[in-house]
Length: 245
Image 1 (cartoon, rainbow, N blue to C red):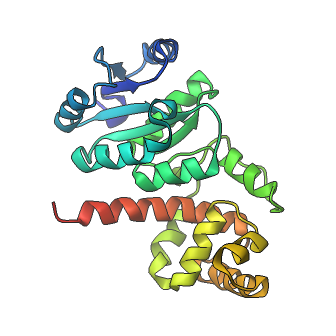
Image 2: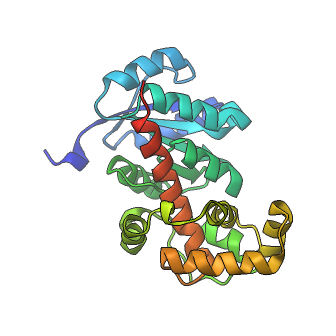
């Protein structure tokens, strides 16, 4: 049986029973076998997540609010093989960045289409880091960045060039200040806001941005932000996996 058709034990952690039943219905005819257990019972779910070789947790961001990133970090530490997808009612660049850096494998909106959700989960189970690029690029564009029309969602498979860049130009090539500025770009901050935050001249920020673009081999800030979301979140996961227990 092909790997992408194997059954996946799936847990739903939703604040609303209606949302939980809706997702259960969407996944009923797919390989995602929704567990009857309440995923809000973190202790019981953790035990199952640790035992299952293929396990997926769909986590409603509203369940833990500002604690979502901490919950994900704890789950990933105790069940590193589990895949976690965060479901959000509205897009928030800071919230998305925090959850991906905490170890989430995907971030999607509750308004996502049924078929798209299943494809989204398939990519996550293949090891891709998936998030709504359309919303990311729109957020950056609203801050003055030009961008090409984006796909409905982004994954490493849909942007192989970004993966090549990430592997050939790791963030260790960046100075501490450049890495700090790149994190700001990832959050969609314009030069003026970055300069104010770091207490440096705006001209200094511009110089650093040019150096960042050259080092990671992209042509504009939007591409740099996309690179950062992909690479920094992957790097954070790799680093946590290498820490002694």
